[in-house]
Image (cartoon, rainbow, N blue to C red; front, side, top):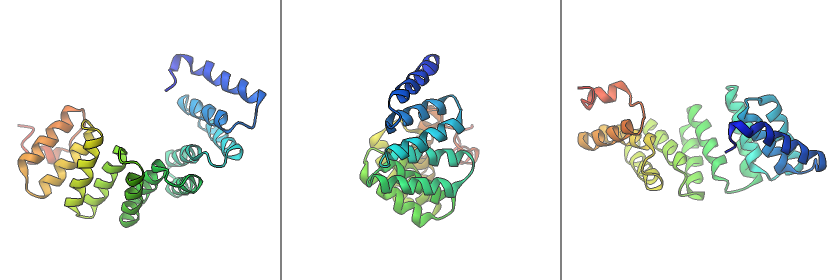
Length: 206
């Protein structure tokens, strides 16, 4: 992570490096990430395109372009760039995680679950992937599968609040009030805003 106080210096260094070697995809990518940090999205987008031209297998650049599409509300564009990312680097868990997220946003839950299972198979410590997978299962009413995904997420990071929140919802669905309450309280302790109706049902606002 680049500190804000030296981001301009870092950008200048990347541009200087490109002046000497304009064919380095990694330098174009690094410049793009720094420009994203300054919210200079149009320039960042140009840098990521340049990174791909120089290094067609640089999957991270495809993912960044997908992220820029998502900022514009372009789900199909985001899906397209992340699909290209996993073609550029088969087994790239972040790309599959994003594909799953987009399918979930589009209501295509079967496709979402398929992509998220691939994401977590390639990276068993992919906390966000497991948590999104749990959400997709909850949306399909597959409570046991959602619980299993949350358990895997918490194995990777015991303090991931969204996983605790999803577990609270899943246990509530199964009528396990005490387990639900425990995980809702953990989510809240970690700074997560548990939905008012969940808090009410678990008597957490009393």
